Image (cartoon, rainbow, N blue to C red; front, side, top):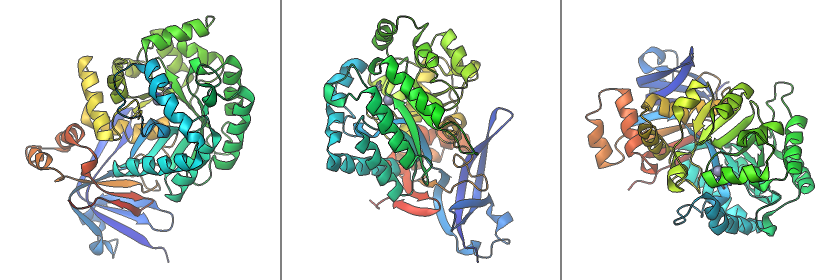
Length: 440
Ligand code: GUN
Ligand code: ZN
């Protein structure tokens, strides 16, 4: 006999129709989950569904709460868990002064394992149920990450950083090792349960041309087959002015920064480019034409003083994009707080990031950027039941502010402005509870 779990409460998610984001808010909703598969059977109004589901009356009933799809963080660095909040410098300096130092500690497997667990716990307590993460150049750091994620049954994407120059010797691989180590990890982890592999050249300055070729070779060798989506590719692009100047010196024959990746066949529908603050129109056009995706990292861009991205440009060129924390450049794991800063960056560019779109960019749009919209991102039937329960009375201020909110748009805007991990009351993975916030 098939067994079902029932969850009752206010439910919010969104879908897309004709290129528009359509919000769905059900004030008294019911979600039905197949216990065995952990997939959503249906979601609808409680009073319309309860007669069909005899056990619905004994549902888990979440009062003063909002049930939503788990957040999806499209660009983050798990080894930078302790780099977060490092003082006072800009990207290239910050990499040398803090990041490359910390990442060298991940040759110690016990250390890597401890941080992987801390990182995943922090994601979960912030309501992030899927992330695409950079690891370090040590292959064990990837193995350890996937092992930890698999134990918690999380849908995760990760990859070994490929980096063969312009970094401390201890962190540099060489292009052959990098290729074979990545290949070994792909064979072991890609499409194993909920794990996916992303080819991960850190950024153009730390890879030789030979290494970029090897990265493209991996993408080619594991391209989409038999309905299996191929490997993703993650890297950085146009984040910082000094970085861009450096790329010009290192790749004098390239038309622009994006062209470095593009000319090595690292662009395309499986490729996700972090930051993209300083894209030229020519680069936006090639990103769009190649079907490449973009991950925006507002908190990192403000924290490192990198610059202000332009959402209107991404939209005008028809590029798929989503939001990301970019911890440790970013200073918060909370996707509420990522949306908050995205909103402010948009304001500085005279663009209003409406709350329905902001939540779309941390759920369904993020799933699309990761080619995972068939599995996660909203509550369509047959998607995986990774969801969060938001406490609408988590803080005195939020509780009082929400008394003034007249519709779901207002509620969402208040949550993304005032919210953080305190709001995450419970987290469910494939319909199973894995986190309950401790009562204060
Ligand atoms: N560019 C190359 N590596 C990094 C990194 O670790 N963080 C950020 N924000 N940018 C990068
Ligand atoms: Zn990054």
